[in-house]
Amino acid sequence: MGGVEDDEPASKRMKLASGELKSLSNGSSLTKTIVGSSRDLMARPLQSEGDDDVVGSKGVIKRVEFVRIIAKALYSLGYKKSSARLEEESGIPLHSSAVNLFMQQILDGNWDESVATLHKIGLKDESIVKSASFLILEQKFFELLDREKIMDALKTLRTEIAYLCINNGRIRELSSCIVSPSLCASVGSSNQDDARMKSRSKLLEELQKLLPPTVIIPERRLEYLVEQALTLQRDACIFHNSMDKEMSLYTDHHCGRDQIPSRTLQILEAHSDEVWFLQFSHNGKYLASSSSDQSAIIWEVDTNGGVSLKHRLSGHQKPVSSVSWSPDDRQLLTCGMEDAIRCWDVSSGECLLVYDKAGLGLISCGWFPDGKWIFSGINDKSICMWDLDGKELECWKGQRTMKISDLEITSDGKQIISMCRETAILLHDREAKIERVIEEDQTITSFSLSRDNRFLLVNLLNQEIHLWNIDGSLKLVSKYKGHKRTRFVIRSCFGGLEQAFIASGSEDSQVYIWHRGSRELIEALPGHSGAVNCVSWNPKNPHILASASDDRTVRIWGLNGLQMKHKGAHSNGIHYCNGGT
Image 1 (cartoon, rainbow, N blue to C red):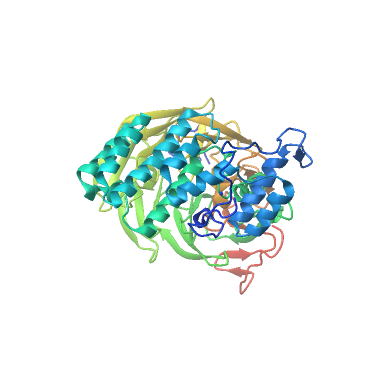
Image 2: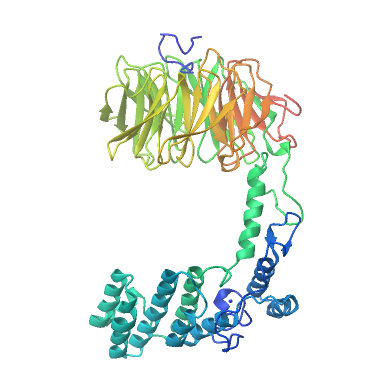
């Protein structure tokens, strides 16, 4: 059987206001006059925003802000009369008369007047005033060039834009337009009237982003707040596991346990000994399992999630402890306790090539992301790389792997991740020649890389699973507890919708599932009669999970309401379950 501490060879025990421009989403034309008086150009203060004037049961929503955002949303949706009526009835203007005038001046191309109005809006931050003035005068500069008023453009550049003493790099770019007008298109000028109007509306959008939201409400602010609230509800839902699960503004979001694969759909019984490893293909159409019976099996997954045997892969002379799918899922690598890696054609089941290292155990295997090379961890603590023809290309000597070892590579092909000591994982950057190390206090038994390459899931001897953020500085993020592991290598995986869950095998014959964010244990699934060595979640179907066990079976887990279609209760080493486990 063998434990983590055994000395035997590696095995599975290694196992804007009224009339805002159209582009600001209210449906009015670009040249429509914006309501607003030219008198009292200083921005008149909006209705009191004191803490007593609030709405909502929590007392945190200011009434003035709330009404202004609703008015903005109505304009954006094209309900201009309704928005104007809201402003009139509430006495709360969407924008001050000064801001309305400023926005109309931008659309009309009254550049000098708009700069003057900008200074009267009451902005306290001088840097914002300068930056906004720069954008306005830059647009003035380009439109003068479009009308071939070169000297006027040069004067604007020298006496107005440069006077602001900011963004010298951009000033040099604008200067190049005077010397070589052909460069204007690449720098930002356009010589068509329609395009000019569009560029003015674009300028207004840029100014809107620059000015404080208390002056001009950001576009689609209400939509953003609602989406944020829905997203937070979804993320707080520990059972959320379906893209089809609709979210409504009428009720708070909540999913039930029926979104988690917790019912045995099939029992695959084609292996004759302990099943040590399994992995779904990237496209979710296949599942590969490997066993102590010296074989691996490719299973086919149909559109309903049903699994059937496709190929039995025979040829290894010792137990097969690991499999790895090629990036295109057309080939499969298998390896284990012997001195060979076998490459198989998924379609035919034919062995295409054998990679070997005489006298050494090739204990782990994997593909580079481009599919042109493969790599393996070897029991002499080195990592080797081959091309698809079997030629050894490179070998990293030294303490790169352990006898009991997993091996991962990031999707950009830059980092190889391996165990370098019993309590340490090495992240080796092949290009930068930089090495980083994750240090644990306990012996590491296995690890798994997230699909986005940002997180590493580490299984430890002390019955804990640690989640590490490896994107930048190495940081321990979460710990998951509850499963049992005393003697053997137990593997865990990321899974579910957006990999929001963690699943793990366990020596108590159960499959454990945690919500990744909350760390809450949400399922412990009985059914196997032996230690569960490995789990794999279908990357394309968040409702399908597979587990491999010492009881010689692979279990396919699905939703409680799912009914499998089949011809008989038993077929080709497969037992179909219609209820319970």
